[in-house]
Length: 388
Ligand code: PMP
Image (tube, rainbow, N blue to C red; front, side, top):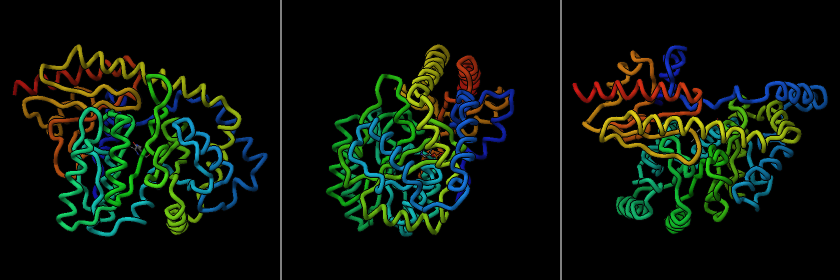
């Protein structure tokens, strides 16, 4: 097991004088706290005997039915609650899935860069992580096919393709519709299960959310969802939607991991979705994050030195910035902290040491003004670094 670059940073980055563009913490202060409090109180007074009791390892049936309604917003209209497993955040779904599928030495394909804690999970189960080339349209299908041919020639056992296809963490990139179909087809032919990790899909800045990969490939994809970014990560409620044979294994793995998911938070989320104007609140969150995204992109355009390149996300939390001149973003971080701005160095998002001149910037947590200040401070640090 390896320590996460991001976690190690949290302590420093949370000092009030520092603008943290590092953590991916949702803006929970935008939640209507009184409504949350009322929901929780009602769950205890009305359904306390159930909320405070053990439940099933698969999760509460009412919540699973409601999760199916949520997934329909991204085109998944055929999901049955029996195919859903509720987990302690989608992180646990990822852990359980890896436990079920991956033996030491098995290959897990991922984007490069990819979600840092997924790397750590795969590494903990001794997977061999192989990055597939990506560009501004997401995974490159030809690159994937080529990689699979090379791995087949080596005799490698490739188990999973792990992808965050929509508003990716950390890249902010979205896989195009055409490539979604191609990626699934290539994986189907190679007998590789696609894991679609989609915590940000509903946070689209350009109108209605897009179509999940799973919507068009029910037999080939395990879909991971979460209420962490659209409600509250403190609830620790996420889920997996999987083909029946996989669902059965996930439930067994969940039983041994956790016995029962928290009934208290499951019923709280279920009751909140049933009684609060969640769709309206989502709209508000999209506006809030879009304003912060705009602040970041404007500030980057105004202040970054020539040669710096960055992504332009249409949703989610993150921008991926790559610097010219061979700047080492990990070595530069202490100077950024001294200038009161924090980010996450790019190397942590790769399993192979790539990403030295890149960094992840998140605009989800600080208000727009602070985002702008943070980027300006960062630009000064980078400009000084380029002069060294
Ligand atoms: N996947 C991705 C891509 C994420 O960014 C995160 C949260 N940072 C998670 C999974 C885990 O989310 P949670 O466990 O809170 O649902």
